Image 1 (spheres, rainbow, N blue to C red):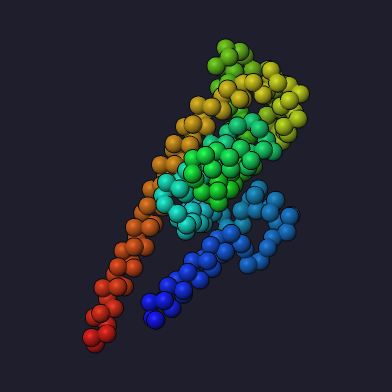
Image 2: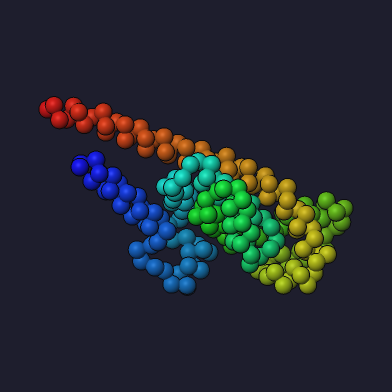
Length: 209
């Protein structure tokens, strides 16, 4: 029947759209990925629009998408470099959020331009919570790329204050990201439904003509 054919076509279209969201037509090399992370070729404003479009096109409810994205952003505030993805996927699974949106949240918040500010903010807030004054060596280390082994080698200087400071900042980042993304997705899906209803109402008039 026509309904069955239309349903099959819609299903194939949805699968194709999801594949386009997850894959690029022209895969980038590792060097290109590094260059794009440091300085996007499309520009900052176009990059923001691009990620906004990709988020809005993800399958699922506004809560499902926003919870996954917000979890990726919030976990990026933790000092556990190298295992952000594992932690974020586990939390998103517990919250019943989108695992795909988790990766987008980590990419947005865990990029080389934002991470240094996150590290300094969590460290200084954690030191304030502990009632300590920051050490010059620890502050200098935060201005450079560091690894999880660096945190373990200086647990009292880096890991402890950053672990404390990341909690309030990460929670705040989760709620802000959730609110922003849920509204973006809701508006996008409402606009799409309006377009679909508009086409359905226009079809009978076109057939009469």
